[in-house]
Image (cartoon, rainbow, N blue to C red; front, side, top):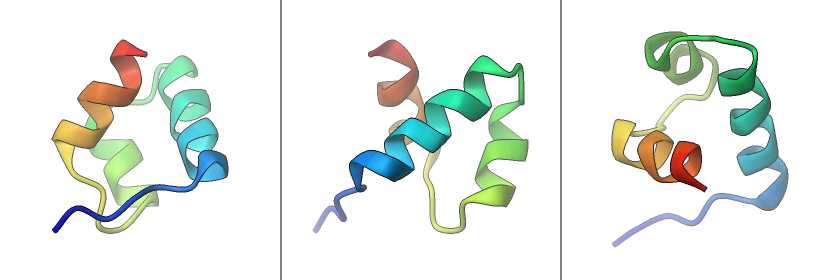
Length: 44
């Protein structure tokens, strides 16, 4: 079952990616985050 991510968490992730953080750094800051989730958020 997939866990949904709140809009505020999505916004935080997008800001972190926009600040040139690596996937690994973002995943360290947000526990339980999967790379597939990051991929889908970065594409949007």
